[in-house]
Every structure is written in C-alpha cells, then in structure tokens.
Length: 583
Ligand SMILES: Cc1cc2nc3c(=O)[nH]c(=O)nc-3n(C[C@H](O)[C@H](O)[C@H](O)COP(=O)(O)OP(=O)(O)OC[C@H]3O[C@@H](n4cnc5c(N)ncnc54)[C@H](O)[C@@H]3O)c2cc1C
Image 1 (tube, rainbow, N blue to C red):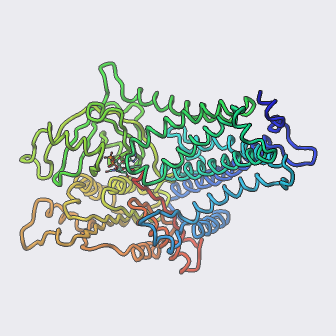
Image 2 (image 1 turned 90 degrees about the vertical axis):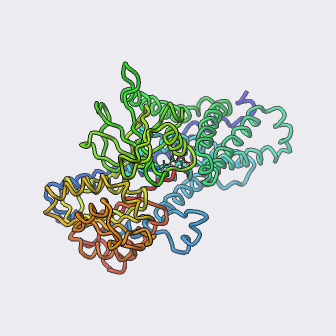
Image 3 (image 1 turned 135 degrees about the horizontal axis):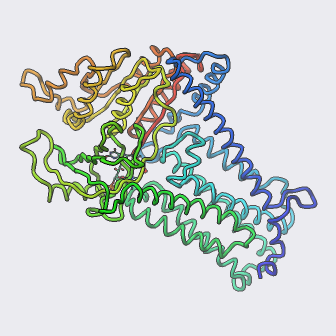
C-alpha cells in the first residue's frame, strides 16, 4: 500500500541518487556520523581531563607543568571565556525567561544549522519531485533524532553524561528539550513538503481522504506538538507531577503512532530509542529493588523532623546495610514515601558523607510533595520541642531511595583553590563538597565557602555540618587555608551579643577562626576576584542556587579572566560547576 501511494518510498535506502545527491536514509546515517564525531571528541577531552586530574592529585600540585598541559590549559581557558557568559542584555529579561549561556546557545544553533544544512544539501528544489525529496529528507532526519532525544532523557543509562562529563540533569534536560523542538521543526517541514507535493497535483484533499498514512502522520505530528508545548517552563513548573504523567503517556502514544506512520525499513531508529528507554527503566528498577527491598519489606526508614521555622524538613535515613548505596559528595537521590505520597519521587541532595553511615537531607517545603510530608509530620509527629532547641515534630516513615545521581565530573581535590558559592538550601550541596575537600584536600591549598541566607536562624539547621567541620579542623585540616563566610541578607535577624547569647551563638564563637557571619549580601565579583588573584593553580568553583547566581558567577569569571588579559595563564584558569534545584 505504502509503495503504491508513495512511489518514491524506497528513497530511504541506498547512498546516492544518480545526480550524486545523498539519499534521505543515508543522510540519517550522516547525521549520526556527526553526532558520533562530536561525542568522540568530547570523550577524548574527558579522558585528557581525567589523566590531568589524577596527575595533579598525585603530585599535589594544580599548576600545569608540561608543555602539553599548558597548551591544553590555554585552549580550555579560551573555550570557557567564549562559552561561559550569558550576555548582560539578555539577563535583563531573566525574570521572565532564563536565557542560556553562550556555550549552550552555540551548541543549539550548531545543531539546528546541521539539520538545515542536511536538509538543503545538493537539493535545489526546482521540480515538484524535489518537494517530495525534501519531505523524505525531513522524515529521515526526524526519525534519526529519536535515539539522541531518549539518550538525553534517561536517568541511569546516561551515556551522554559519562562521555561529556556533564552529569547535571538540568543540563541534559535543556538539550533534551531543544532537540525535541528541532524534531518538531523537521517533522513540520516533512508535513509541509509532503502536502506541498500533493497540492502541486491538486491532489491534497483526495489524498487526505484515501491515504491513511497521511492522516496518521498528521495525528503523530499533533501528539509531538502537544508534547513540546506542554514542556515549556511555566507549564512544567505549574504542576510537575501532572506534567510528568502527561509526558510519559504522550510519549507512549507518540511511539505507537510513529510505528503506524513510518515504513518498516525506518523502524530501526524507533527500536533503538525504545531499547534505550527500556534498558534504562529495567536497570533503574533493578537497582531500586536491590537497594530497597528486603525479605521483611522495605529496607529503609526515614526519620523526618520539622524544624523551628515550620517550613524546613530534616530527613535522616540510617544506613545499616549500604548495599549499592555508595555516593559521592554533591550527588542527589530521588526519595519516595509510599505511605505519605504514593507514586511520587522527588530529587534531593545528600547533605552527609558516606562515612556518616546515614543519609541526611535538608528540605525546604514547597507546595506539593514536600508540603504533604511536612503536614503529615506535624499532624502525627511526636512533639519534641521541649527536648531540642530547633525541632518541632518528628515521625518515621518507610522510604524508597532511587540513586545516587549527578555530582561533578572532576574531583575537587585536583584544584589549587576551591570556592563554593551557595544560596539558602543549596547549602546541602555546599557543605557536602566542603567537608569532602576538608577530609582529603589533595592539591587544594585554599578552600572557601560563601553561603547566602535570608535569616540568621537558617544557619541553625546546618549546625550538625558545622560541628563536623569543627571536629575536622581540630584534627587534620591545619595544612591549608579554609574559610566559611555566611552572609545574612536580613540584618535584623542577627542577634546582638549585648542582648545575651544563645547556645548556638556560643557555638559559632568557637568557630570564629573558620566561620564569619556577615550582615548583608556579598559582592560576588570581588569574592571571585580575590580568590582568582591568590590562586596558585587552577580554581574550581562550585555554585548552587538560582539561575541568576550561577550566571553571575560565570560572567564574573569571564570578565576577570579577560580583564587580566591572560586567559590560560597558570593561575587564572577557572572551572565552574553549577547546580540548580529546578527541574
Ligand atoms: C538535583 C536536585 C537536587 C535538589 N536538592 C534539594 C535539596 O537538597 N533540598 C531542597 O529543599 N530541594 C532540593 N531540590 C528541589 C526539590 O526537588 C523540589 O523543591 C521538590 O521536588 C518540590 O516538590 P513539591 O512537590 O513540594 O513542589 P511544588 O510546589 O509542586 O513545585 C515546586 C518546584 O519544584 C519543582 N519540582 C516539583 N517536582 C519535582 C520533581 N519531581 N523533580 C524535580 N523538580 C520538581 C517544580 O518544577 C517547581 O518549580 C533539588 C532539586 C534537584 C533537581
């Protein structure tokens, strides 16, 4: 039937047409050759980074020594200067839309240009059969993108994160969405050119009546358009659970529709995409079961406490048997509480280190899942206000842990200086990285944490982390410089010593050589400048907070590098790893 309706349906097969132009199916292979070359280059750079990191940690020196390392340092530094910034005039609109960095924009533009290039390469579009040819090209280029889109969305089988060294789900999701938008563009072109071809014979209306493939194609396009529209930021953030359920269901419908619309010889790309997705789900669920299920039921119980501001939760999961639960500082897991909020799993950063033998989370309650846990704990929880100065209620629940995921691609121990800048609840990330470097500093000579909080009482929630830091300082951290600066933006919440000091104020007094509490907001640029000026080798900056904060840091790094007019010099080289808590 397909061959009768579409006499050129074999266009997908073979390499070149008699005029030397590539056949549509061959273009799909060329597309993967380019993607493969890109990923191969990224892998080579990653291997180079890895070797460099090992060398630095072994020699306890973060300064590039060999000629090759210096050349590499110069090129990576120039690359960062070109790709890190977000142009200031775009930041003006950042309240409405978050504009990506130049690097991300360039990658997206390159990708779209690649598709458009493939589209029109040796295809002058003069005769009506050229419309058909372009239509087929668009079809093959559309279907070829499916495995890449799925690869960017999977959680466990994240080959792309491994290759590119960018484990952040936020980064992967960004490219996942933009490539899906490119898919919508190519499928729209496919639909347009096919219709244009039939319209040139005044045949379109009749085709729509007799041709089920065409009707299925239009249906498939509508499902794809629905998926792309429902992933835009306001809809995604409005009701995440609803967005997620809709996304998964719509994708299943899309794949079924695609199978019905496309000829069998093009199904290979669909099967690869489905295969990757199923392998990821199978791997993820196997690990979840292995980790969480024991013969007696669920393996872990979480002790959930609501702290003083009645808006923050502290969750502790004692890990009696670690099984596969080994994590690196800065990683996160997805937690679900089957008895409180069934079928919901949300990501939270692990605020403890593996040697603490427990997983600790500090969570700011929002409107959905987190609010439900908070309310239930306040309702059924034991009132412990009298026993502790900052917990108001606590309860225990069975918990399912899925993870760990994420974390930086480069160990922090390979840098000369590590600067951690975090906002509010981002301290979960900041303190775990800080403690990790504190217990094993490798080549690090200077370690600095800048934490911006709104109220003085927000610091109390992280007392346990500060106590652990105090302990480490007393033992093994004397050979390098460490500093924690806590900026309290609401100055009026800082206690005045002459009005009497609480137990916590006295505790902070003990830490005064390491911890400074400063009223007001920090000037990020001057902090970054002072750190870069003193660095004796490459600096690593870990940033966790709003998009505004992480953008500001990257822009400042570039400005300072450019102002110093020596990108790539030994000391100015600076790598920024940013984490965001937005999906
Ligand atoms: C990698 C990562 C680490 C995080 N670590 C922490 C942490 O240590 N402490 C902390 O307080 N918060 C952390 N968050 C944020 C936390 O996951 C969300 O605040 C929480 O899921 C909101 O749940 P809710 O239903 O109560 O929120 P809602 O009020 O329904 O939504 C609030 C916001 O949270 C986002 N969100 C909702 N559900 C999810 C989900 N399943 N996955 C991702 N985002 C979602 C929504 O897009 C929305 O913008 C982290 C997020 C990520 C992505």
